[in-house]
Length: 255
Image (tube, rainbow, N blue to C red; front, side, top):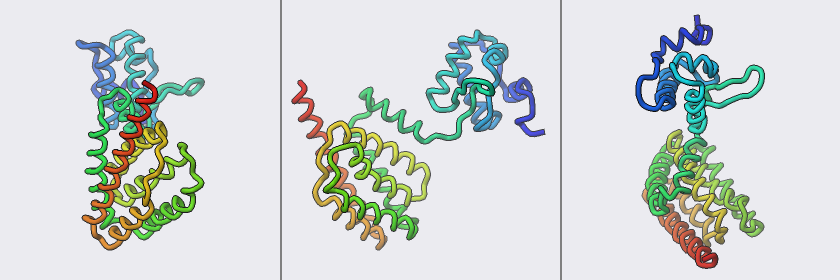
């Protein structure tokens, strides 16, 4: 019999869920449900037992269960669906969860602009070195097409979220050329943070952006990772300096 056909009570017992003994109840519940998802007792797309049943299993109030489920939903592990056939379901993996968490930390001041720049430089170096050996002709063609499109549209793109998306798409495509899922997720998360900062201050694009990217592509094609890394590091440093200057100008105007 497959796991999905085993009654919830049996699976919970087999999965090692136990009654709450110490600590705040909802923390204990969250920990055990995370463990059950991590070890495969509950798989993506499966529904957890009803709130009432979980309260009985854990020996806590339904409010305690409710708090635990809210926390798990906020972290992106589960999602609630209303109506008939609804309930709390284990979510498929969502890389956007990383982006949201990092964006929240930036908003709270827990991540500095300097730390983000340093992380982008180090991360992009790894991406470029892998892309030098792993990029397919299709990857390179997509990067070239992105440069061509941006160059064609640059004069038409006024300061807006549309323009910042066009500017930052290149980093996502470059990360994809590394063929490493973790680097792709981290790059996309950091790029999203920078994109939000660009949206907030709307600086003019740096001059010679397309020329820099074409030089990077030439180095990438020839397998010269050091030259490609040097091009990108210089560019990221300039972008950060421009962002910091523009943010400071806006703070001065509003103070």
